[in-house]
Length: 381
Ligand SMILES: *Cc1c(COP(=O)(O)O)cnc(C)c1O
Image (spheres, helix red, strand yellow):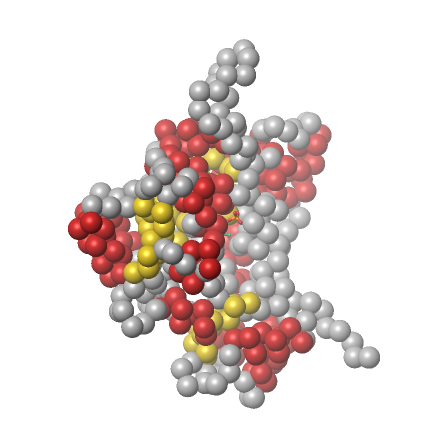
């Protein structure tokens, strides 16, 4: 039997050793629950890192999106626009509130929401008198959307923006951190994100009132009283003080992690120069965090992502397809979908041809060489 190679994962957690100190301290001081200094510390450190005034740590990015939508006032029958090419956590909370989704295609230059398609959708909605109550804009694979174009458009139509920066912690656009472009923005610390709290999320905003309200709802909407008093619907969405400790430790090496993922991205691009593949574009003015390196197989090449991913899997290397656009999901098949050109869907094209490469920051040079070798030979090179 042949020796099985060490498993290389897509984007596994990468601890730096300092996390355990924060957890130990929480144990020593019995701050296991409910809140505690790691939570407030993590929130303050995230605010400082991102250059934003207020934050509240929650149980997931999806929970953060849910409460952000509630704060904006999304309710039954409302319409919300959302980036089409994303993970379902971006948009499922819209359904939790009984609102309707309209999906907006990507632009080729950033893979994020197309301002052209967005303008089309806004115009059509205005004509019908069904302007959206919010637009959810995703910073996919760790790269900012085109906020120079999108924010003025949303302002013109008076529609608030929620930024889904779940994948983009530490990325920038024109010198400003992702997660500062929405009226409320959200992050995720799920296990495969650039830093993790084992599971968790955060809502951030310069609007103190918004974050205070989300904090209140996330703690079961308990009114200040000597007994249990509820005037509003509550949720059990708060992050634990233990998880926040992991986050504080992780945050200390975030910039190193970004630098390493950037190196990995450069390595793949250099190694695959002669292959019929193209890396995801880096948009002008944007500084990605390189969370995942994604390639698309060029037009004219017969190979499919599934074939390449299978070849990698045979050598115990995890790679994945690109996000399957929301308008293609059976659950969302009734939703309206706007694209730049009627006869071409950018998000479908990316899904049909995209391969997400193993991009974990602890990958060694040897790991990278191994991935490159298997990947190249899958293309017959
Ligand atoms: C991971 C992710 C989410 C959801 O975050 P969770 O913490 O897993 O709930 C939302 N949007 C995008 C784009 C994501 O990648």
